[in-house]
Image (cartoon, helix red, strand yellow):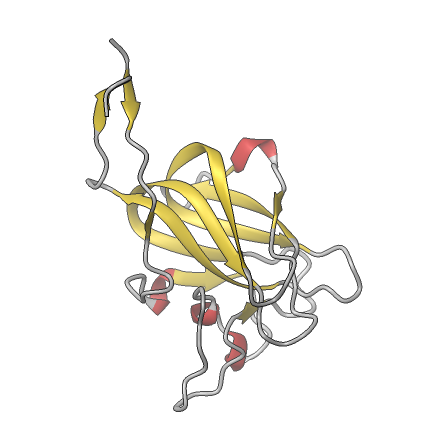
Length: 172
């Protein structure tokens, strides 16, 4: 009898804040209003702080990425992205990199390109055909048009270490 991983799809904490600001890093950011910590799905502007309600890479960054450290290896089976409320802040496509230790990096399915959102406020969720096990996830926006900007908000779905189990295949 073979074993299979029971699918799980919990939000891992970007939107809720369970992932701390210090766990979210980026290759660059355009201004203090678009720091990596602003990249939380459905981020709403605070009355206490100015924000673009999302992360945007600096215009000079030729290889932008947004990175989330989940602290422990987790099973990841979906990524949801969302644009920023301002017009022109779009990254319609992205690649996914991951690591278990922050040293050895892998590209999900040899450079698979995921489709992002088509409208700034809508969420686009991409389910991973093959779930992956990783501690650190990098979203690499691909900008192809003059009016596209590497900006986004996101959530990662899956199971944190210990929230998943193995069961015999064919059983519920």
